[in-house]
Amino acid sequence: MGEAVWQKVCDAAELAEGRMKGATLGEHEVVVCRTREGLHALDNVCTHAYAKMDEGRLRGVRLICPLHGASFDCRTGAVLGAPATVPLRTHEVREQDGAIEVRLRG
Image (cartoon, rainbow, N blue to C red; front, side, top):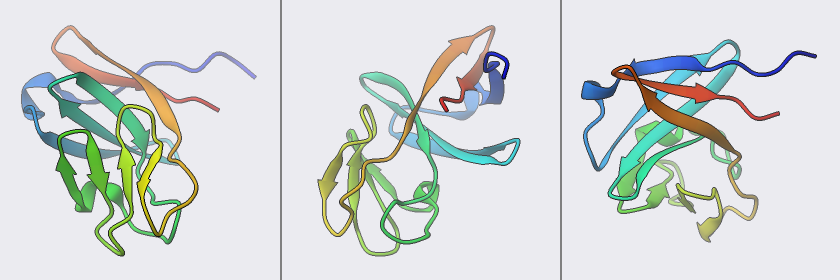
C-alpha cells in the first residue's frame, strides 16, 4: 500500500472563513472547514446516522449535523454534542499554490 497523496478539493478563494465545502476524493467523502484557527478536514458523513456534514452548519469550530443536530469539533473530530458518540475521522489539509488539498488518513 503506497503513501497517501495530496488531492485538490477546491481553489483557496472558494472557501471563506466560517464556510465549509464537501468533496469526493476517490470513494471517500470529506468536508473541509475554514475557521479563524485555519483549515480542517474531516469525514463528511455523520457517525450517528447517515447525513452529509457539509449540509449542516459551522459555528466557530463546531460542525453541526443537519439530521439530528449532533456536533463535532472540526479541529479534532471530537464529539461535542449528542446523539453522536463516535468522533469524526480527521485528515491532513493544506493550502498550497492557491489550492486547498487533503491527504486522506487510513
